[in-house]
Each structure stands twice: as C-alpha cells, then as structure tokens.
Amino acid sequence: MKPTETALIVVVPEAEPAVGRFRSALDVAAGWGVPAHVTVLYPFLPPDRITDEVITDLDRICAATPCGEVSFAEVKWFGDTVVWLAPDPDDVFRHLTAAVWRRFPEAAPYGGAHAEPVPHLTIGHDAPKQVLAQAAEAVAGRLPIRTTVDTVRLIAGTAAPDSWRTRHEFAFGRG
Image (cartoon, rainbow, N blue to C red; front, top):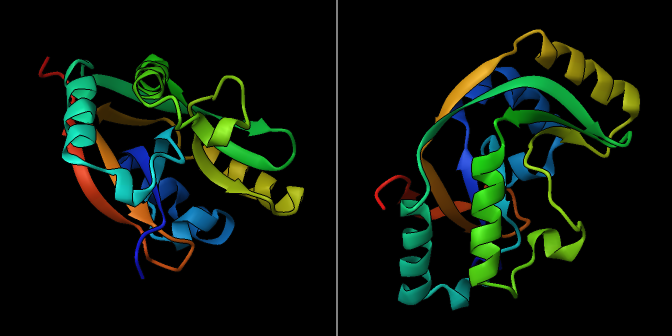
C-alpha cells in the first residue's frame, strides 16, 4: 500500500525497554510500526510532495541543530487521556518544530490542533484512565531514560499495521 502521510520524528530507542509493551497496547502509532519517539512535525507533507528540494531544506535545518543529551525523567499527562514522558531539555525539539514549520507553513503541527505543541514521548492514549495510570506507574519506575539527540527521521506510511518506513535520516550538528 502506498504511503498516505509523512512525519518527522526523533527516535528514542533507549525508551523501548520501558515503554514498548505499553505503547504496543496503548498507542496506535506503535501498531503502524512507529518506534518510541518525540514528534518534530506530524502530519508533514504528503508523500508525493517530498522532493529533492524538501530533503535539502530539511537537511540544512537539521545540520544547523546541535546534537545534545536529553533525559526523560518525568511522566506527565494531557488531561486524563494521554500519558507521556517529558524530554529535558526540550528546546531542541521546540527549535526543530518551529524551524521546519517556518519553512513549510502548510504543515502545521498536529494539523493546527494545538497552538503550541509540547514535545513528548507518548506512552499511551485513549484508554481507561486506570490502565493508563498503571502504565505510567510502571514506566516511572524505570526512569530516567537518557539519550543523545542527533538525528531526525522522515517516515511515511498509512493507518495499516506495520506500514510506516523511514524515507530519510537527517544528521544534526554539521552546520
């Protein structure tokens, strides 16, 4: 099946041991094949609009972004429906989202649903609060999670299981 959507994400493989089993049950994106991550921009451009120029522009934005250490030491909530991990510091994610959105204003974060997107790594959503709270408690016991932020992935896929694939990776800190 041809991809219908794209996203820009920072993958956090170090989080998988703590969040993987919960994400597989409580985060639909995990079923699509999307690994534990912090979203830079979703939805991004339609797959047929990913041109060499787009790749060059994304490469330039990422190359101007310094690599950095990030820690996930706190579980937070959006209301009672989404449980997530907070990256600290989160400025690299905010900077990337703003820079990409400035360059591609038609690709508003989360389709414009949130005035100021909050960088986060989703553990689970849209499940009974008790189920999410149990996941939050289990994950909290495995914190902190530390990682080096040094690449962004452009991924593409559909709502079909295991359909999301990496289209390109962009390295930080070369600019």
